[in-house]
View 1 (cartoon, helix red, strand yellow):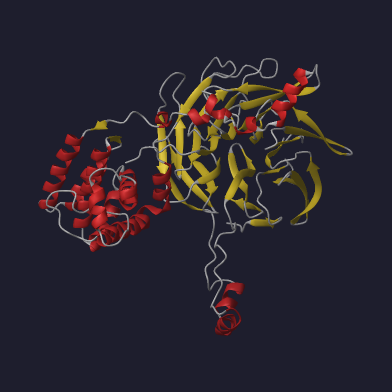
View 2 (view 1 turned 45 degrees about the vertical axis):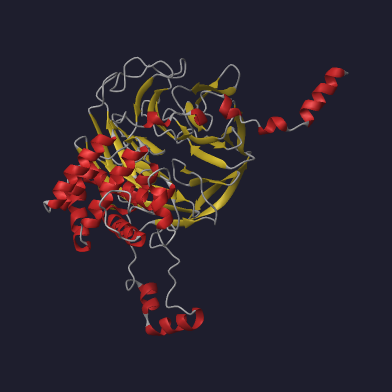
Length: 203
Length: 365
């Protein structure tokens, strides 16, 4: 009798349906370590990023903007602290802003056609999306105060958080990223967006 | 290039299709059933319907010699349909999987077939004479996620599988009593069941949609969701491959592909048309599309559409000059399956595609 009661009580309740059995299985795809999807990536410290930033700026001052762009795209920060990643994003955006609109497509085409160039253009795409994701992706720390000051709540802010930066509006920064995005798609096609979405190596 | 033969069967996605060896019968997976079409002149007419699954059918394959049809479905079952004078007789296969079956293919020897599943296993199924029953053995390790696709090596022992854990793997599916001992190859010499002969991943690690052995079986290609195609040339067991060539394309991802000889791959997917890749161990590249696009102004119908009268007519009727709701490609939606249709010795002279738009198209290469 009691056994029957227990049986009906447990089978009438549907609480067992809500148990996530995948979480309990160590072999399940939910417990899948996505780090196994790429080779171990070298860790970049803030000091490395700053050193690279210095070199890139030097190239920019020397007028070699293509070299500067290649420099930052060849050393993406995949494995590092948020601060280091953000600092590298700032470097990339700085370079992008310094390149004239008329130079974008020929420069991208040269980079894309060089050996291993499609990988560099894919890295650029990742930084464009990270830049456009703006504040939401890296809301911590440095950015929050400046974001509150910007007139439009676009969520994107890259001004004010590095010493000596000029005072552009957020809209201008975003339009640079958008025009680069258009040029990158022209050169590397929708495939580069596709790779930006699938790649496990996040910038 | 001859123009493609287009069969618009219905307005539903085709999960998979397969032609019989004589190319007179076409099986397509439509919802929960498999429809058999027979060739009648230049068209295909519905002939028979195989009903046995109660969820979406995900794979169908006709064995070229025996004419047996194997189907698999999200209801976790696979059925083998035996041709008989009174129609096809289904036999249930013991798959022992707890998730949907996603893909099925006969081995070239036709004594086995492989069923990929969402249960992180591949069921290798074979017929047990004494019990009169199709049974299965599971390839389990080291699969971490759903199997999306499988492809057989010409020796019927090695099996390539692509998975949503971004790996393309080569397994041995050697079953004692069913298979003859395979010749040693670049993939290995001793091949007990579930030997992992190769495990490959490309840089950006997208889901693998399609895997394919080259006609000789000595190279493996896989297409992933990062719009790339990767070709692996192994050098021998336990050794790093002699070449891994990855082509990152400017296109949308490829869902299915076949080799045409050892130096050409034809792939199709989300771009709704087929593309040709050429290359060898020293490098591969995209060499173009297999589709001659219709250009406005060419051909009868298009020319009429361009006439001034027609333009004003359209503006009057619809308030716009022309409809651009049609893609310029033959397929009007993603191509999900691409299979060899006609060919010999590993080269493909015709291939067939099917996709989400309910069309089956036969192309010449």
